[in-house]
Length: 275
Image 1 (cartoon, rainbow, N blue to C red):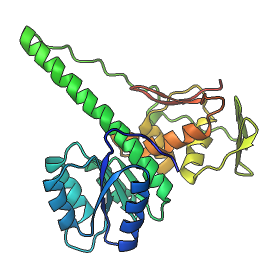
Image 2: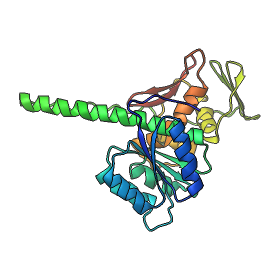
Image 3: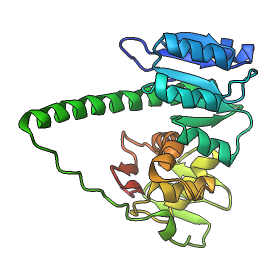
Image 4: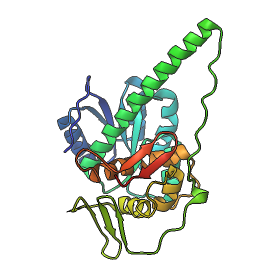
């Protein structure tokens, strides 16, 4: 299982009405260096969020009392705006995924899900949270400086992705694709990288299958979300939140000699290179 060092140890709240799930997550997070706390109901979770600061929350969407996971996400924007939420559900739908992401969840995982994936997702969420807090601090210092100088910062230019979901290229009709060290055999549903066979999830396979058809093209997250999840109505930030874990795991699986052909282009999207 992946371990990551944090100082001080991140504090995580586990919210699930299934006792066995709470105990399993509490144990595995504790072994991975987290401080843990748990709640069996939505009401208990809200009380703990009001009384204590948490770095992250593992949140079951469907709880046994009247307070749902979406209710908690809504209130959390007021009482815990800097906490990273990872949503778990056994009843995933497109609508519930979009609602969770729009309500501030970092990621949305469907049960059954491995404990390792939950840990990895939490670590990614904490890294993103730390980055976001650093950016907030930097912006606060900049505002203070501009106030002192009685000046205003010019707005940052917005970079438009090369490819958006309305300009998705037509797929090439073939069954064998090769990009650099990557070979994808669509007929056999087999992927190799540097002659090593890879095990991909269905979402990872969909993403790679499309990217190998269009190497060197930068795709927005909205375009990739339409391909991987058939969600055409997400904006770029929502699509990025939906795909960030899938892209991260796919990038790691394609890594060879400490390099990976799958790159993110800041402000634009994702591109597959052949070297």
